[in-house]
Length: 639
Ligand code: NFS
Ligand code: SF4
Image 1 (cartoon, protein in one colour):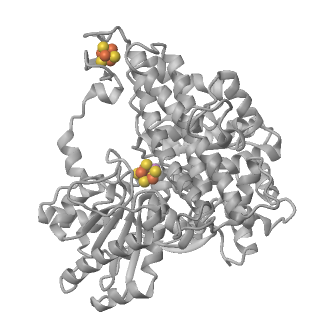
Image 2 (tube, rainbow, N blue to C red):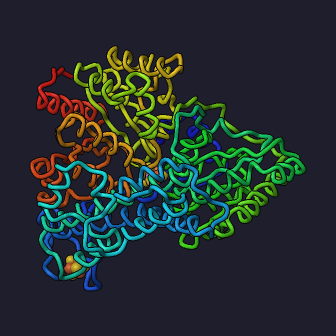
Image 3 (cartoon, helix red, strand yellow):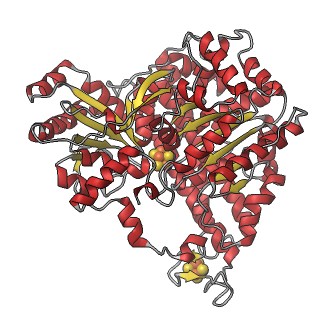
């Protein structure tokens, strides 16, 4: 029964407790929703005006048009666009928040924050075309922050974070298609306008608008990565652990959940202060144990080796250990159900952002000006809860895996430079050419209650690793692989084919690891999918080809969020064939479905592969890689 829910043994242990105590979880609420609405599932429901809601009968027995005359194709395309706009608003809202922090840092108005990575600041400034000679760090930070904030509203020229980060071939393609966004917020608002009643009824034109919106999402992601690195440091390889076994009974356990390191970095800083630690000890704790959930967890794992507690669909589960004293959240992917489960245990759920409050949570607003003070206040709440529960039994599953993370683009190039200092990408390119590495697949996205948690990731990684495919991972996908021990040198020994194993061992040895690199490199949170693009662009430029010719592919095998739909759309726009392991809500339009899964290949080079069977999906991605190897005149292999 529980294996249908999750492949994670610690989650299954917690589900037993939930059952015993009669606590409802995401899986129970999913069951209560079944059967889900077929109109919604196929994208055929329109609520874009109050003459509706309208729905189109996919079997041709009922209405074939909405009241205004919108067809199935129009409605499906418009709905898809609205997902993309929402995803772009989320990623870029996160980036805008960081841009404001950087702006305040440059003006001396956010004393708790600073530029921790000056080299990255200068690198980003130069990429944007700024002269940095003779300027102070604050001055450069101010210019980069202004350039970042200028990305949002309507401008006369294309987005700097698109123009300065992609291949010439891609930029020419986007100009030809008329999809270069001229402002992130402008692109989001354009989608909202064009999808209202009576504007864009042409489904293909709508899809072009969606591509434009997805490129705005890409800019938001890349900005998010760049500004986080500037403010908090560019990740370098770190060792850590993942899964619920990282909780410690005798410590004040605090989980950081959400997305933006702006909040979590302050909690981390406050938790290290002697006075705060003393407070915890006075309450009878041995210390403070910070752990991460979802992408905030990824940000902290990547930069500080903070242990990962759990991800996405299992976010309610750690509360059931009884040992979790507080969950501190910023925004995005936070289930409102957390407070209901937490009430049974006394765990404090603390919201910190004005736009993201949850009934039943304590709200402690964190502004840049008061961040550390508020962080201390929040930790005090967790200590208070520890005091109340310290003599009660806890049920911490004895399940955790070791993890190697921290593979920023800079870290990967640095590791490769140990093999070839002059031309760090050469060892990777040579390995692709000689076939030791067949190609590269990026795993991204979430867990989705419709898929047994982690099952698709695990099956696909095993299939691809043994066929010498190097993998990158972000977001809760990286989290899934972390919890199951796939981000370790041992996983390379166990699962990698001989070519991949040889390359990863050579890099690991050259870097003093004494072991191979993991078969899957954790490159960060979901905004950090931009790091995968940086690597692809560097490979393409070195080889003198466009991204759409590289033997690369992506997969979101268990995605659920609108952000993931936005990312998937820019991935195909960048020329990267992208697998979806959950059927997207577009099947109500055969036109939209065929453009996304077939037509897009001719126009963009990338397209969606929808496949719910993970082994077949891995086979499809391997076929993509082989086709592209053939296109580059490289030796190909059979599945
Ligand atoms: Ni990405 Fe990261 Fe996770 Fe999905 Fe949510 S945390 S931003 S959307 S659930 S991977
Ligand atoms: Fe119905 Fe058209 Fe209004 Fe949508 S926009 S709800 S299809 S009338």
